[in-house]
Image 1 (cartoon, rainbow, N blue to C red):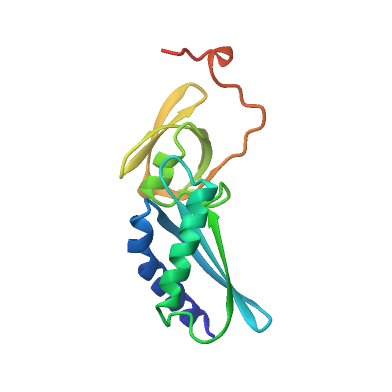
Image 2 (image 1 turned 30 degrees about the horizontal axis):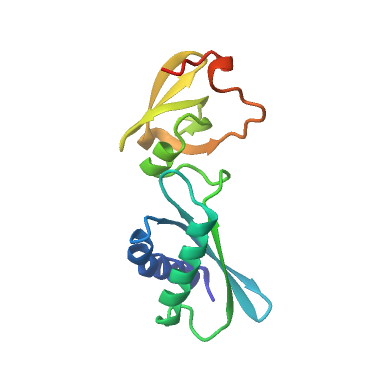
Amino acid sequence: MSRADQETVRRQIAEELAEPLAALGLDVEAVETTPAGKRRILRIAVDKDGGVTLDDVADATREINRVLDDSDVMGEQPYTLEVTSRGVDRPLTLPRHWRRNHDRLVKVTLTDGDTVTGRIVGSDDDSAVLDVEGSRRTVALADVAKALVQIEFNRKSGPEAGESDA
């Protein structure tokens, strides 16, 4: 299967799943197909506001199986379905990704080549506001070439980090 054909299949799968998963409060974040011998692995990442639970993944798996069983988009070749949460290693590409990662540290590469690392303190459909070492910086999403959540170990939050409960 050519790359163009694979992309067409991924797009068709995402389109067929968008509405049924939206009914469960979930968004389709990624669809990947990988050859694995005589089978294929179909990985579908889902997400929602507040994060995805194991129950959400189980519900999504049942719904995806139902939709794909009623469709011919996967053809006759056998496949293994894997449903996952979006994960922090995926780039922030849509406004909802910025909203869902509020208060997370991100490294942003701008289209002009500059990089900025800051904590997301706000966002809308057009821009994100980052706290960069105590100063606020607004970044237009159109100017973002790549943005990745940074993994933080032992981050202090709450009153001991100087935050108030009010």
